[in-house]
Length: 235
Image (cartoon, rainbow, N blue to C red):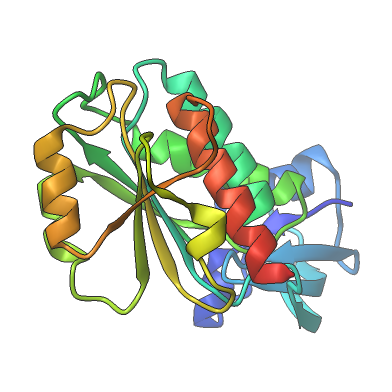
């Protein structure tokens, strides 16, 4: 099914942007009167009819709209330290969009091996994954900030807060998270969190958990956390 992305629909604007218009009119050769499917990135699908088949600003009228029923009611916020190999983070974002996540933050830790990201490229990857998987929710992506700044900004919310850290005598995430709770989950760099960062996270209200008994790569740990949280939320 062809799907076009139009975030302007949230503001009531029924016009595809230049990139989506070009794909719709020049590549797929749609004309006035054709019906198309649109998503707004905020959780809604639309059936629409083209009324102005222009290659740079294709106008349309809404026929009907409906909610993406696969969106978890609980908000899942993933905070992760980008991997040295950025391909792994790009792969993770594709899978996270397919499975379901509301927000992704990038954090710089003491042991981080990557301290710069191209947020616009990552956003484009998320949009592509959303359209490919026929989802209607585009996660919010936040700029890379230090873990200290992140902890300060997120210490006072009502979300359940977890930090994943391999070790003994820790509860598993799937055993302590309860359905219906908004949640923030922290995933550390390939060198793991430092002891100081673990202490700061505890002071900010984050509970240490494990995902399984195995040692996981950063992107694998993030994916496992998202899968577990979504499974519980939708069960």
